[in-house]
Image 1 (cartoon, rainbow, N blue to C red):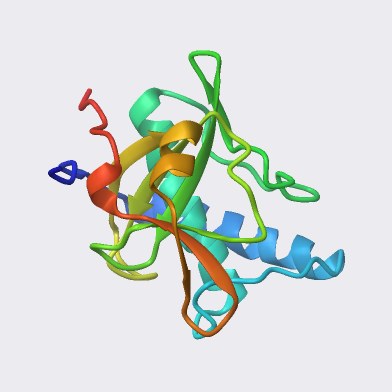
Image 2 (cartoon, one colour):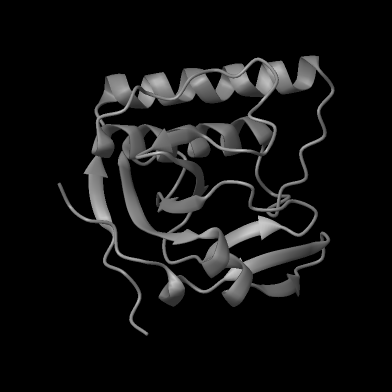
Length: 166
């Protein structure tokens, strides 16, 4: 299979500031409620991970004409980030280009579909919507790996479906 062609987005300084504020607020809320957040990349600060995640959610919302991401009081509970055409959608964003869809093994993909976004770095104004997969796609193509911080479920990006440009 051929991996999907990512759809590029360029965020303005204002949009980047919105994503930074959402990420920092989510991190503060998480810390205030003592929520443990096991991340695949232990080198990244939790606030940075939240900012990267907000960037992916922001471009997804922008692409589909949905409201921008919000600061969640107690997180989304691992369920979903958006509703689109009657389907629940989980957005996962990688802080580097070329990665696969990953999910810690202790979590399950509870949403109907998941969307993979990526950005070259925390500071970058470029964000890409890479592709999407259904819960069944995830179950069929996941592989368990361990990079030294517990098991992770990985779906190679070649199994992602193409997102339609608007």
